[in-house]
Image (tube, rainbow, N blue to C red; front, side, top):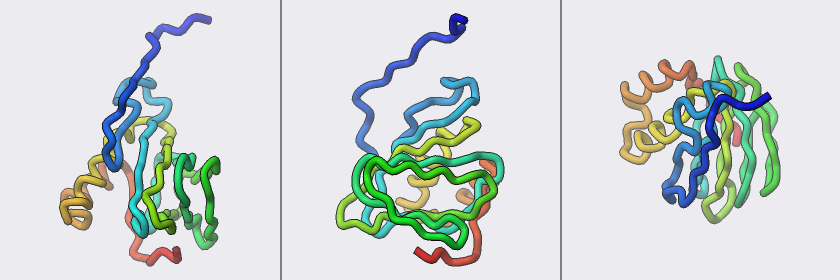
Length: 148
């Protein structure tokens, strides 16, 4: 069966800390793909995506992931799937930035991580704007501290 959509090719991505690879509408809501760079020691607090599965594919560097109460350390080539509703967090335990491809399913999360990253970089990670962003993308920040 032939596809009703045209192929999409993007090259020369901006080398930012986090940017969307897919744009809203590219996949008709099937998934979102985001290229993430995490500085050493950085990473989000414990949180839950209520409506989206999240998957990580490690391209460069190291990544430590908390999945509920379990902690795993992964290297380049590793794949981690976080089912919706599971408390999780991740950090970069290495001495250099890592690079991770993050996939959300279903789609619609293309602007979530880049927007949240910009808020955190400007000291607004706990602002009302950040809380509104979490609510819009059905994500909960948990008060429980991460164990990684």
